[in-house]
Image 1 (tube, one colour):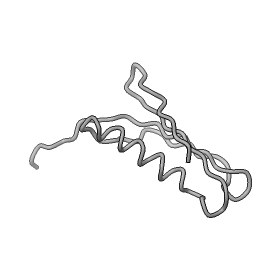
Image 2 (tube, rainbow, N blue to C red):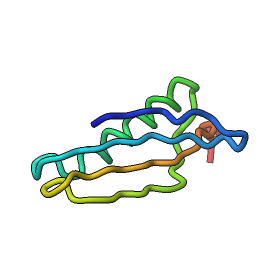
Image 3 (cartoon, one colour):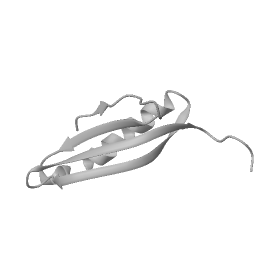
Length: 80
């Protein structure tokens, strides 16, 4: 998994990308990208909200890549 935070746009969108190769690694890039996005938002006391997930390829053949677009939103701590 290689990750990179794409940074903030004027709309508050962030992006994490990842890749994996080898049949035993299938799907791991999505898990790692999600963990990275969650950790980024948690540092701001916010939660990650997924906006888009693009996944291409096959880890067993040529490798997979994932692009996860998300926002960080304040936690709703109001009693229900």
